[in-house]
Length: 223
Image (cartoon, rainbow, N blue to C red):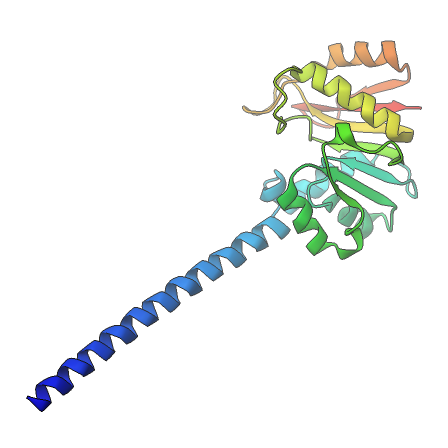
């Protein structure tokens, strides 16, 4: 009888240890997944809409091509603030502020770029304080896919209102990268002619550059 009890106790202890090991493995797997998710959000180009970092940097170069080195930048739809990192590595230090209403990306940016902790603003850009302004306002593709919950403004109205806000916050000019008719499925197909006519009528000094891409164009308005 005593031996049988010992065997029963040993069996129960073994089962308990196995269950504890399984639980530890589950917790460990969850922790690894959580760390992987955080790493993806903080460093992946795909997390901010690009296939890879090389493509992301190439798009940023296109936007920065129109902005003199040394001029400050207000980045509309900044995500993590990667435009600052690219500028720092290829063009040097820059006075930079970014605004975006994607909280996970803003928080990721503050972790990756501690120097921008006070300069990454979590806010709808239509509600950006009047005193936030820089030499140039840039919008690198953030009007090509709607993330807002505004059901009143159509895509053209939303873009025009965005241009107005950017122009109001810029000291020297604004730059937007926009998709057009050949844009991949799911992205907004902006009408360059319609946008150019609207901008020229309201602001005058407007350039639409079609050389940047087969499925997009760059809109530049100087003050």
